[in-house]
Amino acid sequence: MLIQVDPLRSMVADIFAKAGCSRGESERIARHLASANLTGHDSHGVIRVPRYISWLKSGNLRAGQTLSVVSETDVFTVVDGNRGFGQSIGEQAVQLGINKALKCGVSIVALRQSGHLGRIGDWAEMAIEAGLISIHFVNVAGSLLVAPFGGVSRRMSTNPVTIGIPLGDSEPLILDFATSRVAEGKVLVAATGGKPLPPNSLITGDGQPTDDPKALYGDVDPARTNDVRAGDGAIRTMGEHKGSGLALICEMLAGALTGGGCAGPDKPYILNGMLSIYISPDHLDTDQVFLQEAQQYIEFFKTSNPAKPGDDVLVPGDMERQRRADRTANGIELPDDVWSAILDTARDVGLSNLDNLASS
Ligand code: NAD
Image 1: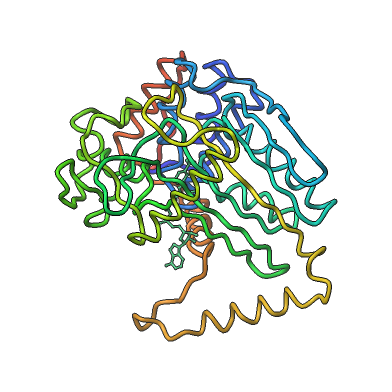
Image 2: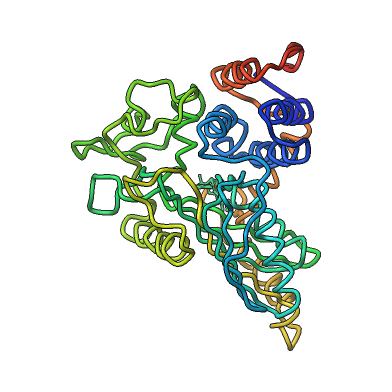
């Protein structure tokens, strides 16, 4: 199903407004979900709508929340997201970090108890807009999806790490990835008729590498449920022992240090913790060499002979820019299951007039 971004965004906003969110919050949620689809990260896009609505109903997520400041100095802030939508809480937390880094040159924001923060690259982009480098470590208390290197039982979630670097007039760098071989949403996409998983992304309960989403979801319909516990397998970490170590660091920084808690079996809610560090190049780059050095180096980096003749060597952020340009112009392709689960959710919250949104 091919859908243009504007009608998709406004339909998603209408769903959240009908479900009890303010118009402003609904549009914010829709904007961030659609941004994930536009950048090619369908796993963090509108596929999440049924799950967010079910979390809103169950109390895992709360509409209209403002973050609470737990503790702060000029440089750091510890904040509690009060289980608000990550799209709202994330914007508030990142703005705090931006304000302090613009003043002090550097800042740290420890965010606990946020609703799902979606594509973390959005938060790096917000810092880049303000001219700031940002580094984000994220964990998901209440979500056990990933087995550590050498293990089979789930002990953590997909724990993303994201780094954004503004480069003046040149395109910024945005490195943004899950520390698992695949994000859980990509298993969800594969399970609902979308792009198949790379081989051996998952591991079965008895230790066999596989790409079958059933290892995670069992036989349930994952587009209509938030139950990822039905399967007896796990997602594997990226980069063998190195990705596993990075994921563990996310638990330490985003879970233990923020006060949001590490992943575990007895957590009542699925929430993100995020430790973010903001750096102002204007403050640190006293010799004013950063931009020229960085831009020249990226040119050098990209002139590496391509492994496949004719291909480009890309830097982090290139792929998302290419996809955003393409999908903004040509629309977003959604698997039929995902689209019909969104339509069902729209009807459930009381929306009508849902015809004519798709174009092929
Ligand atoms: P991915 O595997 O697609 O990797 C994306 C990164 O790799 C980007 O920085 C991209 O620019 C870069 N990249 C892609 N192709 C490249 C190439 N050919 N050459 C050079 N660089 C290239 O991403 P992922 O691990 O599937 O993560 C997807 C999204 O899921 C991310 O946006 C992440 O923030 C999000 N996520 C969120 C949560 C959460 O709890 N909120 C959890 C996990 C993941």
